[in-house]
Image (cartoon, rainbow, N blue to C red):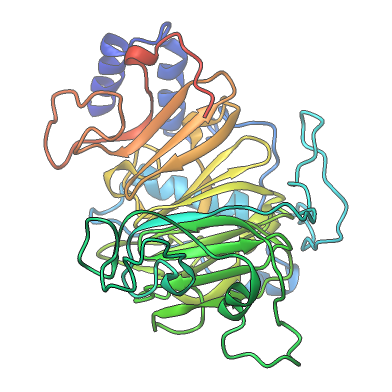
Length: 420
């Protein structure tokens, strides 16, 4: 009965016409027979098969899902089918990628991996501002032309030396920049950085990541849950290098865990693994364990997927593949995973109702996600207690408001093509 009400509500109130395809997807997702409905009717042509080596077949541990409610019989059948399809198949797995590996072609004929970083002598000006708690802003390389920092203040109007109330330029040249990156190193060390060019800066809830032009990644800031990946839970006001086998192209720093994306399409996660109270599986490692250092997400290797983008929320993670498929894992509360259920996922699994969309970009917040498709339409799902999804709050204007399936953001955007 609840399912019929959802379909009726979608048909009656949705502005997107016709709504029959959405109804059919809902029916296929809720099909009773695993033999007649494979839950792959709405996905792309990508072959996503997780493989377990034959030598370890006897030691296979079934997938574990946790929820605040007792799982229904349909959920149990779905999870059993998931385990059989992904963990016991015999499809050859993709080999571990390296920086020198050949590019893989995607279905649209483009290279499936981002380009390797190219060296350039072009200088960049970087400005930062905000509140620097335990090193989130590198205060010791901020240029201070007005003398506000020297006078004990943090800006033009702020008397707090930790609050930078206006953009201040970073000193990225000369001895100050070199000494900032080489704190505690001797000149003879192999990993000494000299005259490095800063390419990207990623600001998180409690830390900052800096990616150099050669692909090396440095982090600093608060680290109470191991979200910096430096091997401990101590905060750091000095940059720490995160050694990876491939150059880093993007960093997503969450409040409890973080992720690094390499130029070869591999994904590394680290930090808090979750709990039965907050939800588990946010690292996508297939377990509830926390990881103090960057750890490769093996399931993407086994599925033959290359990651193109990643977003880390509070207790969930969203990943975009090079084929335009959206994957989620972690806490299922408030519809964070976009699959109509509140069951946690230990592995990255596709958002089934986004399967027919060619997604080009993802974004999100603490407990919600956004996906932009090639046609310029944004879909949103997750928590909506403050109207953050932009698709209307309906009749549930309270702290429990949510969307458990991707909903299009329309309103004044209807008929317009969103580009970013």
